[in-house]
Length: 115
Image 1 (cartoon, rainbow, N blue to C red):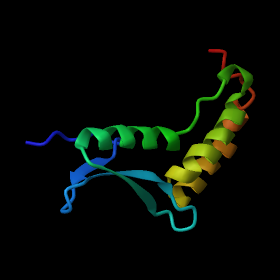
Image 2 (image 1 turned 180 degrees about the horizontal axis):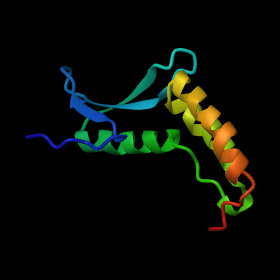
Image 3 (image 1 turned 45 degrees about the horizontal axis):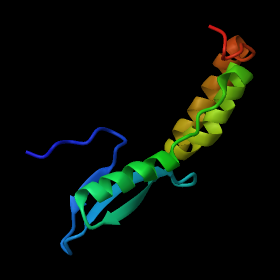
Image 4 (image 1 turned 90 degrees about the vertical axis):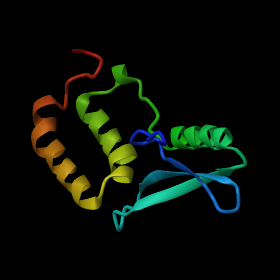
């Protein structure tokens, strides 16, 4: 039986032409909310695994230096760099409402580096 790949790792299959293909989700269309799929090709399965891992890492959010941000600033950066690309438009709107109406008034000025 084939091993299942974890969520966010993409999928790998062998094509009819003999090449291997790796597919992954590169985000969501901001207008329609539909997932944007991209693929990588290679001659061997291990080559595609490496290419797929590299491609997924390039599309992920870069880590921020947390000691320079407040909770509110980090949430704004997260909304723009991750949520806007990864979730549907309706979810984005809901998240924005929760952040602006509940989280920022209570915790928005707290520095992230503190606990």
